[in-house]
Amino acid sequence: MDLHFTPEQIAFRDEVRAWIAENLERPFSLEKRDPKHDADSLVEVRRAWQKKLHAAGYLGMGWPAEWGGRGASEADEALLQAELAAADAPQVPNFLGISLLGPALIHHGSEEQRRRFIPKMLACDEIWCQGFSEPGAGSDLASLRTRAERDGSDWRITGQKVWTTFGLWSDWIFVLARTDMDDRYGGISFFLVPIDQPGVEMRGLKQITGESEFGEVFFDGALAKGDHLVGQVGEGWRIAMTVLSYERGAASIMYPAQFDTQLDGLIRGVHEAGRAERDDVEEKLGRLVVENEVMRGNGLRTLADLAAGNAPGPESSIEKIFWSEYHQRLTDSALDLLGPQGQLVASSPSARDEVDWAYEYLWSRAGSIYSGSNEIQRNIIAKRVLRLPSGK
Image 1 (cartoon, one colour):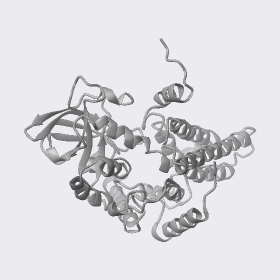
Image 2 (image 1 turned 180 degrees about the vertical axis):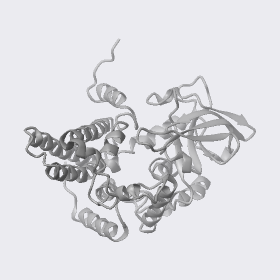
Image 3 (image 1 turned 45 degrees about the vertical axis):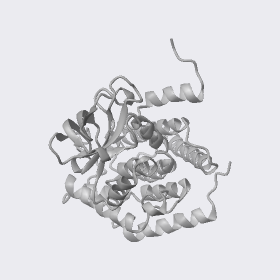
Image 4 (image 1 turned 60 degrees about the vertical axis):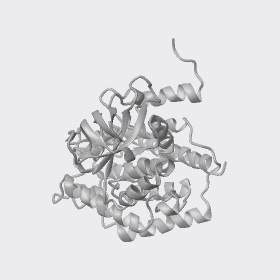
């Protein structure tokens, strides 16, 4: 197993790094602290950034060229995401559409669906959100109850979805809905639904950080046209799981790159706050640095497996547990080591290298829940990696 990047991949990384330095005006953390911005204007900052990435050919890089990609490897995509994270670039508004819906359409959609939706998705002319989770169907997604019923050649969607990231700013939502209430897996289908129509109500949900980045959506007989069914009736579960299984490759070295920046800020902050003499400082910081390198090494192993032609397996659950719980340990340590200063580092809207530790602490609490709760990830590891017997 080769854990080193090729000269071509290193050249690509350097190309991306130079492009970001030329095109990113300032880190997104500074945009968020700028009092001139509100939630709507920050979405427009993200939209403008996505348009720049699209014009440069940095979106959907692994897709076929005919759909805006360049047939790039998972390693190239991972290097791009790592550089974007290290630079604190804005997250594109259509990250769910590009990472999940785009591949679903390329592999399972019709030619008409690909031509209609993919170009506008990449250009951020239409923003997509995800309609999978429900109040009673999160980690156990197959228990979803939102239903789709025939209306001539079309469908009517009724039910509720929740944790709809960017829902308030989205134009479309891709929805898993039940077309057979008695078939747990085979009774689920995959629909493309416009949000601006009668029968769809999107509500924002206030998060602990004070934002409403995600929301909940209610469907009351909302229209999904017949030609907006992806694949065949009853194939929704298979389509969703196929796409989700490839979701984490590009993020394999992104989180360590993001944490590099935060670690640098923590180490500098500890010295500036005059707290470097605490007996436990060296041990705590050293452990965080080592754990981040372990995470990076595991990400490189994932990329090496993919390069060898191995499909991502349940081992990716280890990665998800590690980065989410590491983020919590990092922010816990920051507030402990920095003391009251840890609550004040965001006070200057012009300081490029400060970390808003209070915000990071609050946001990190969600990491062990979204993208499949860590309890579910541990069950996957127990069953599919360790082959442990099921409890009676």
